Amino acid sequence: IPAATDLHVHLRDWTQAEKETVESGTKSALAGGVTTVADMPNTVPKLETAELVAARVQLLRDRSFVDFAIHAAPPVEPSELKKIRRAGAFALKLYPPDLPSFRRLLKGASRAGLKMAVHAEDEKMLAGDRSPDAELVAVRKVLGEVGPRSQVRFAHLSTSEAAHAVLAKKQSHPGLTIEVAPHHLFMDSRTSVARIGEASRVNPQLRSQANSRVMRGLLKEGCFDFYATDHAPHTLKDKLTKGAPGFPGLELALPLFLTRTENVPLLCRMFCEAPAAYLGTKKGKISPGYSADLVVLSRRRWRIDPEKFVSKARVTPFGGEEMRFAIDQVFMRGSTVYREGRFVTQPARLVR
Ligand code: DOR
Ligand code: ZN
Image (cartoon, rainbow, N blue to C red):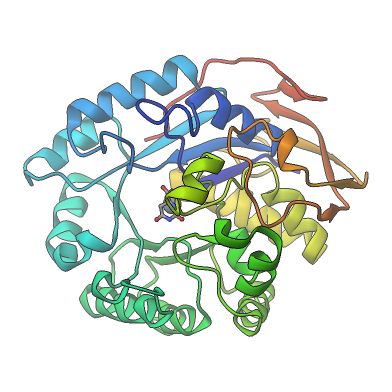
């Protein structure tokens, strides 16, 4: 199958190298059949100036094992947006505290030629148990402020209510897209807490079994545009003592999707073709003119063992699950870049 493009990856590094580095994160990507990642800007320091974007591009050029695109955070100075674009970012990523400025930021981003991705949860409703309504409220606010040609990607939609709201609006607003994460489709809060207890925290939260069942129904009907990991690595200590939210997903996303759905064409569309087309790369299809970024799969059975992850992050509610598809070999631009646990470097390209 074509290699995957993951639109939602936190590579960390810099002051958070104990959680993940560009090297460990992008090797983890290769081991999971992913040859392009879109990095997230909530780094420390956060990616909100052109200077930092340029430094990030340089770091990834030097250290990444896969091609990469970069999301920037909203800058304090609106005039910085064009410079951020020139420095190499392809999109702005909004977090809940940015949502009150959504309309202004969308206008600025589109003028600067930046796409936009939104973590839609209403900040005021996030105190305490992060109610599922926080997502619906934020999604409705965003939907109320988009125009018919706005390009807005809803990151990691977790509730069927919010998904239905976006799907209804999409009919007349084709630039709206929906990204879904493995843990919201194939995991639920009760199962996760039984397996890994307190370490189950992720934002948006894991939901009920009933919700993930409806989400899988929508998935099967082809309602979602992108499958993206939200690979959010943390140390075990940060998970347990600080309640750090998120799981590593790069090494399990592809086999998990296929094991649970057996739907190869749907995976190829949502994890390969659509995200590559969104980034404007000639990847994600096995076709003349497209890059020979490929994954060789086998029907081998194996068990997810987080202790064996290439990623530095080891906490996942999927640990112990049996997979029925395994990644044997990965090609990038026609050359082997991963085989049997071994990695080969190739110059990484910025996608912009
Ligand atoms: O679970 C999450 N982890 N949600 C976020 O919004 C941030 C991410 C992270 O960076 O750890
Ligand atoms: Zn994220």
